[in-house]
Length: 465
Image (cartoon, rainbow, N blue to C red; front, side, top):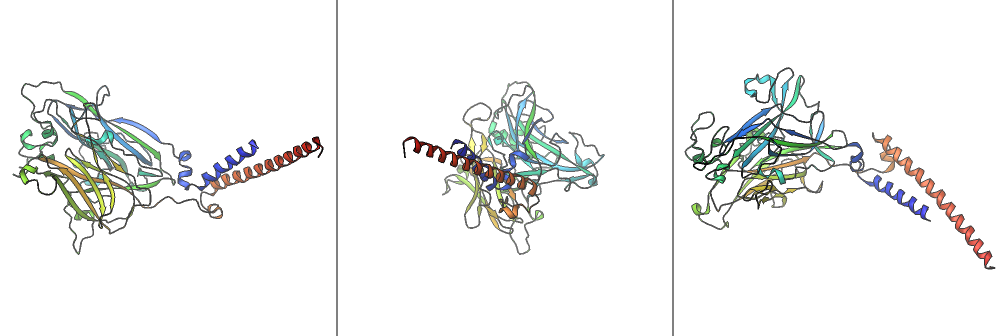
């Protein structure tokens, strides 16, 4: 009977495998996850100094692949992680572009000096023209999940999408601020103009009188105020980034990247279509303190909401927000108020990297069960961003990243349907194996039956029956 039971267990295992969706059943065999760790070009920071450089043609996995996760952190020359209270990682982003073959772009080049015909943007699918990155986070990078669940992946390197005569490359932007010895660490990370003694932007244009802080005041090589007499060595740092991916094939369903911005000034009109050209995303905004505006009925929380008509449709697979210190969370709703996805900050409580007190060290993510959250083309969604108003904040952000799939994985069809699919060879092989096993189990069962019957008859004879 033991042999009979083992055979049944094997049969059940095969039948369970056959009952899984095809992409899930064979994912482990066909798509081995690969991992590569890269480091950015070096950047050197001293107390109060700022790095905001754009590096072109940086290292990135080659080929037609599906990215499964993308993580990063700032390290020193020895590979040690650097805490946020020493070097604040304002943001890092990776942007895809295409360059004409034969045109050399080095890490430190600026494509503006090249002919427009030699350089093509390969931005994401989002509605904000100036938020074209594929990957990117900020201080929260160490404890924010970027994993893309099976059978999905972020498709890159597709030969069919690369313009003829061009090749795909990647640009990295790192914005880091050294706050060692700073008079006001939070003020430096929020790029307050008075702490940087800045009145013009990086192109020499005067700032608006009401512009108190933000990206225009902490551009590359600016200097935030440090305590009188403070001394510390300049040090060489890098952004270390880890990419996980699988080779792209038909078992992988591609997802598209969309980024929403709470400062998007788009307004619905009779002629609006929701296309990129209609959206003006300012990226950053300020938060007035309760002392300046009065407590009111909001509990000292600044809540902003915008409505956006979706120029696309699909299934929500992943979502996460990007906020700065003071953020209390962000969410995406349907027009009727139904929550689709929320993302809340995690604040550090210590000194070590990944747990720095007072800083956002992680953002929660949402992974809806595939198929449960569908976005319809033309549907109106509500984006909400919340910040504490206990103190004044400058240059905060309220971005929301989502991954959307055009379709869901198809479950295995009935036997006669499966055999007719393009994948019939593999499926038929497994089915034949199952049939063969059933035959073996049947033979074993018959043998056991007759053996038990014979042993029973012998027992009866022994006791004279």
